[in-house]
Image 1 (cartoon, rainbow, N blue to C red):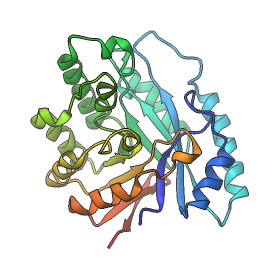
Image 2 (image 1 turned 30 degrees about the horizontal axis):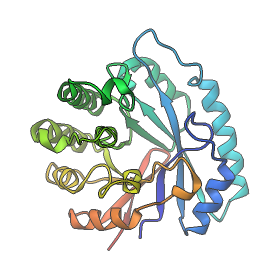
Image 3 (image 1 turned 30 degrees about the vertical axis):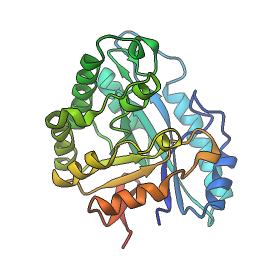
Length: 268
């Protein structure tokens, strides 16, 4: 049984209103042993600045998490995580950020291809969706190759937003490019996340079985699991599907991180 949800968003993310107490109580109710509050910290196209995302924001979040650790001590292991979006847009400031705090767990992700959010109509209505897919995969490769992180989040996020537009852009269609990203993750001992949030609307998580198998074939050893929940009721959603996929793809454990150090939790 998967007992850790390493990708949960609280009200400290601009896209969530959930209180950390609600998150913790729901996790305890579900029998989870460990959660990571991995709120968004987005980097933007050069010369764009977003007031929400700054080190003071992270300091406030850390205070909230530390208080929760005291309140739920003995009931739940609460980790200080972060989801860093497109760190290659502002590489040095991204590195400064992670060196300024004692994060337990760092997710790397890519939401804003060429400065435009994948969920925007600029992408959904575009006639150049294939070029967007190529740019997306190129950016993931840069992040996988250069940045300091623990797990790559929702590697085929583009699937979610193309699905909403009535078509599906699958990274599996670009096997050589995807395998290069997965090989890079494996060579750097980085984890691949199984993100279950898409299971609310679709038949598979992000990524699906084929990509997970490719990761195994390319030498990957570490799998993290996250619900990407923005509301407490979505915590650990679809984890039974994720567990079956982990086993089916040849892995015998999932991975959690604490103090940036991996620990393998057996599913055997």
